[in-house]
Image (cartoon, rainbow, N blue to C red):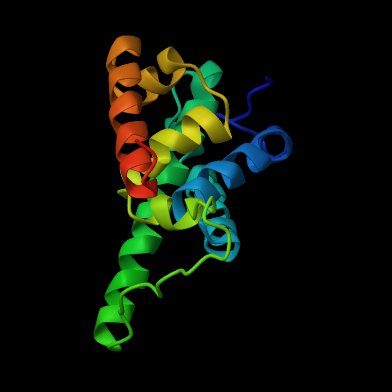
Length: 164
């Protein structure tokens, strides 16, 4: 990458958007389950990344840096949404599902019952296809620690889905 006075010139930053936007959307959607909210989070990520572009020390690790910013933006939006729902008295338990097919599994409902950090972990692994070592380096865990955490999250999801 060529460098001007800032770490990332405008053209280089546009290249980052083109290269990573779809991955960031997949992560944000895995965490939120809401396309519009995911798109807003990714847009906010790009704004934050542009503003902080001079702080990246290792350009080779920019993908992980962007994932971290996106996850933080999602968490911020979910907190705002929940607070607004509480303030406006709209927070209600989800509608019960009465599927016609006895084998039907409501994955969205099961995922919604997991914490945001658990959905983030699943998004990294299954939405983006990152390895345990890649996920761990971004979360400050070892590869084996990440695998153990994934096993616990998958176990909770199976219990939520009644698949034990």
